[in-house]
Structures are given as structure tokens and as C-alpha cells.
Amino acid sequence: MSKNSAVNHSETVQRTTSATRGSLVVHGDMLTIETHERIELTDITDRVIAIVRSAHARGGIVSVWSMHTTLAVFMNESQKALHADIKRLLETMVDREADWLHNDPDHSDCDRSNADAHLRAMILGHSLTLQISGGELVLGQWQRVLAAELDGPRSRTLRLQIIAVGNS
Amino acid sequence: MSKNSAVNHSETVQRTTSATRGSLVVHGDMLTIETHERIELTDITDRVIAIVRSAHARGGIVSVWSMHTTLAVFMNESQKALHADIKRLLETMVDREADWLHNDPDHSDCDRSNADAHLRAMILGHSLTLQISGGELVLGQWQRVLAAELDGPRSRTLRLQIIAVGNS
Amino acid sequence: MSKNSAVNHSETVQRTTSATRGSLVVHGDMLTIETHERIELTDITDRVIAIVRSAHARGGIVSVWSMHTTLAVFMNESQKALHADIKRLLETMVDREADWLHNDPDHSDCDRSNADAHLRAMILGHSLTLQISGGELVLGQWQRVLAAELDGPRSRTLRLQIIAVGNS
Figure (cartoon, rainbow over the protein chains, first blue to last red):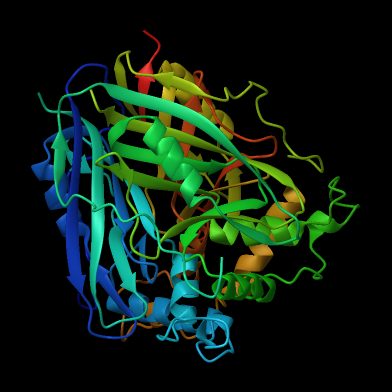
């Protein structure tokens, strides 16, 4: 990831497509990421695309679900500068040092003091449901699928579920 | 809900699953909740799990949709302390007493003065699309499905729609 | 859109519906909108309903996906006053004039200075997954599907993907 914005795959999205025949494809898969900072964004687009292609799905949807409360999944441009802006916005919107009850041993058995991470992930959301058309993930020119761990460094898991009509 | 965090069902999520045969299951259902405070979070996870199980779906997705503009649906940990923190964050982010046009009789025919509830629900989101694998709802260790009514007390409705491949 | 809130179609949502037979309908479609202000909300509900009806889907889901990073898609009431409140909230939450790195030529090759639009769209979200029941889009009394371009005026595209069991 450089100063330049990442450009996603250049497949043409089909304008209108219909299928009322063809096999039903239901495919589940996992992907894992490693983060090294407390707040870190990871571009998982290429890995989602690879799983979609391997499933031989022609048209349908794919759900990308974070398996963790402090791991957000959302769509935006993949650019180092913008990712720094996203981190700064989250830190402004949710003050890590406020006296959150989730961080107070009198009210919570959580020893990570990570209320801010729970609240920041909630604002971004924990899942995306994307479209598959012509066997490819549907994304606009600058759109990328991003995962944001907000209480890292951690090893984290996401699950994908494809429901689609197949190629045969 | 105590000081302890709720732990969800302990079924193992299957890492990779595929199905290209089996009957298509499309199942719709409703669930209702009663709230007693103006802002109140309700853990609906067990009820979503029960509906998923009763539909005999093996793999697929389930959409949980709020039927109301001031009822949010989102995922987070179910803990009394964290729920108080979520309420506090929403109250900080969206000032109930600001001079919102939606609360002004010169601009709006709404007599509930609930602009803050509309705006707070919009930040949390009104729906979740979850995954079903091996007949079970896919959730990480601390993940729970939460509904937040922001203009209660109210009696509220959510609709579930399952699309999956069936057991037979 | 007047002082009055828009009321959506009056079809009754079926409480519980199931289908384990019937053809699978997978249908993709595009819709385009034109915006005239920098921040502008467009009610696309009627156009989504028209596409759902034309697909002859009985029960299932429809994904509405924004093809742009600065075009949000979300659900709320369609009322001029509330839309002004949403715009005001976004402008308060994300300061357009802050020194975002995405707007800094030393860190970014984007010449639109639209970091605020990226961040505001991210808070609202870029997609909705809605339900179809009895051939109709499932929406509560005041619920409408809204698109918000945050860096207009622009000509913008959304993609719809239906997965459902068909009428025949």
C-alpha cells in the first residue's frame, strides 16, 4: 500500500443478469489475519476474491463475518493516508481514557480494558454482504474490503459464506 | 445478564463446508420484544438460534431485520457494563436536546420529538446478515445479536429470513 | 418529499413463510441516481420495489450495494426535516476542514479533498441486505431505502442482487 490508491480487479460487472436454473452453491470458508499494532487495518479483498473464484459461483452473494467483537469489517478505499484518517476519527469519536464501565473491575470481569475497541468496532460494523456477478466479486473502482482490529496485536479469524448459483 | 459476559452456544464452526446439492430452504419468521426504558438493549441471540434450528437449515444465511426506524440491530458482547457504555456513547454522539428539525412542528408532523432516536439507530444500523453452518448460527466466543430500541418503551418486531440448503 | 413522512407500500408482511420447493431466482440489476448538492439524500425505495417485483421472486433477499466509496446506502424515514438533521449530524461528527492526510498532496494522490466524504459514508454504511416476502420488499411503516452521496454533485450507480425462491 503506497501513496497511490489500490485499484481492484478490472472485470466488468454485468449490468443485468438472471438465472433461474443451475446448481445451488453453498460454500463456507475461513481466513485469518495477523495484526501488529493496537489499531490496524488489513485489506482482505484479494483473499475474498480468491475464495469466491475457487467456489465456482456464477451469481449470488458472499457474507464476510468477523468472528470477534473488536474486529470490524467494512468497505472503503485502501490508501495509507485514508487509513490513518480512519484511525484518527475513531480515536476522536470514542475516547479510550473515559471511565467506561466495561473497564471497571467493580462492574466487569474483562481484564483487557478494551471498551473503546468494542465501541469503535460497533460504529464500523462487523460484517459485509457482498455480491457475486459473472463469477467475480462486485466492487466499484476504488472499493476494497477492509478488516480493522481495534484491540491488537491479535491473530484474528473471519468467516465467508457464499450462496450462489453455480457455473454448471 | 450479570457482571459476567454471556457465552454463546459452544458448537464448533466448521472451517470449510460446501454443498451443491440439497433442497433450498427459504423460511421467514417474526420475533417481538418489549422494552421498558427509553433506551434499552435486548439480547435476542437465543431466539435467533431457536428459529434457525427449527428451520432445519444446514448451511446458508439468516437476515435479521428491524421493522422500525428507531430499533437498531447489531452485534456485540452481552454485558450489563458494556451496554451502559453503548448507551452513554450514543447519548454523547447525538445530543437529544439539539434543535433538530424533525422535532420542530414547523418542519415535521412527527409528535414524538425523537430525532435523536432516528440518528442513533442509524449509527448502529438496523439489520444483520448472519451465517448458518452445520445447522447452527455462526458466532464467535463473545458475540451476541443485540436489538436496541432508542425511543421506548415500545413493543417491537423483527423479521428473520433464512436462505439455506436444507438437511435433506 | 414534503413535511409529511412518506409511507411505503401497504402490502402485509407474511408472519411466517416457508418454501423448500420452487425455482431459484438469482437476478442482478443496476440503478443510477443523479445528485445536485455536495451532500444529498435520495429515496430509492420505489425503484428497489420495482426491480424486486419484476424479478418474480416469492421469498428471499435483495442486496443493495453502492458502487462508490462516497455513496452510502442505509434505511431511515424519508422526511425533508430528518434528512437535514442527518446532514447536520454528519457535518458535526466529521469535520470537513480538519487536516486529514487523504487531503494532503504529500500523502495522497487524491485531488478531490474528500476525506470527510469517505469517513461520513463509512459511518452510514455502503449496503443493505433486505428481505423479500410474498413477492414484496419487507419494510416497516416508516422505513425507506436511502442513498446518500457525500461528495456530489455526481452521477452514481447502485447494484441490486436478488436471491430468492421464484413464483413458479
